Image 1 (tube, rainbow, N blue to C red):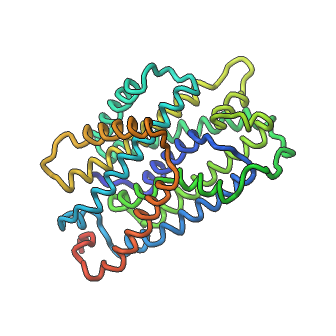
Image 2 (cartoon, rainbow, N blue to C red):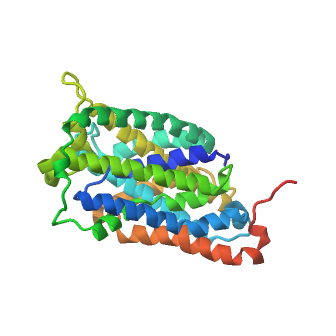
Image 3 (tube, rainbow, N blue to C red):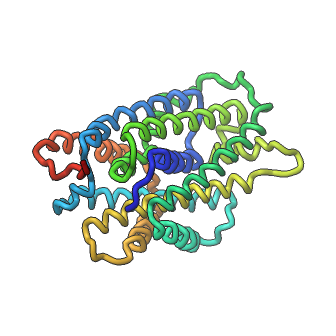
Length: 339
């Protein structure tokens, strides 16, 4: 796997968070804005053992070279399940947002082909593609702000009786599943390890707060009936009276989905390669597993929740903490440095 810069890591994880924000289909209120702050603060706290571990020179490839299979396999399963949930969110969105997708499996196949092509070019090429998509995201956010600016009503900022800060924190935390990806990617990132973590969490929080604020102050009485608040916001906030911008937001939504699925595919395929160097078609197997997981999860009606939070705590905090305590006894787990 190629190495990437800390800035490219920040962009890739930010785009993954942006996709989950677009998929938000829960009630929104002022409590959601407070919940977002608490959720991202908790993520930053959970990252502390991981950052200390990498500060001391830990390397996941070096750990896998010692024939440790359990943790990499658990990470692979986690990425495949989260990829399956991403497919499921896209399928659900295609039904409610009138996306031009005929069948879920056809959609998965088409997007899967794009992800396979991008994944085959390596992590560095993927990171460059993420930078381009980031430009689309920033441009779409600018269009959204331009259309929503004159419709903002600060009188709509009042407490809700049906939404609690605690529940909002759990909901948003359950959607912040990028920390396990961060745990793997830090082994392939140049520069200081804490920098990309703090940047992508801060930028993600700013993005969430902007969108939540606009949903509350622009949608008003329409908000309780919104299946997908973000896309209702884009429908209401049109910067031009003669040309709607809905299609552009849908394009960005699909691009973010592709970036997220490609990231999960690259990570799971690379972990498979570290465990089984002679295994072929690792990306194909990873994507097939994601589509299979999406099908099963769709039948079960599961799209995330408590189990996602447990996965974040396990891979982002508990495992790095265990590695940190054992690292002195296992110097072979450290990254080789050249003097």
